[in-house]
Image (cartoon, rainbow, N blue to C red):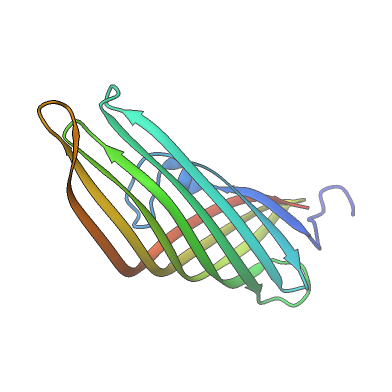
Length: 180
């Protein structure tokens, strides 16, 4: 490989989703930023498995509000090119689970979620091991929402439980990664 050449036959990929760092949610609404990382292993010329984790714990409005979540994704992928370069278009299936908290002075939402569905994307190698990828996910999501309120004594009281089960857009990614 000459200096400046793109990694032609990668085995691993490590990166991050830039959209999560700036707080863009799957429904394209803005929320708190999230640190995140992913790793991907390539094998058999057309297959890979991506593992992703995201975490956020953010206090704002002078500490009166809080938003936090964790998310974990496993995504096996099939690459359309059959040459072991793992670039261009891919499709996959994914599984996701996580939890969240959204708190202000009057109420608190907390809960867990899980989901599964299909993904599709495109990866473009830029320079050496550097690559840019766009990915979209859609599928089924099951969410358990517990709404708490605070009484006059400051105690937290469960006032509502909502279970949401729906098919929806569950993720966008603009990944930047290093392949080796």
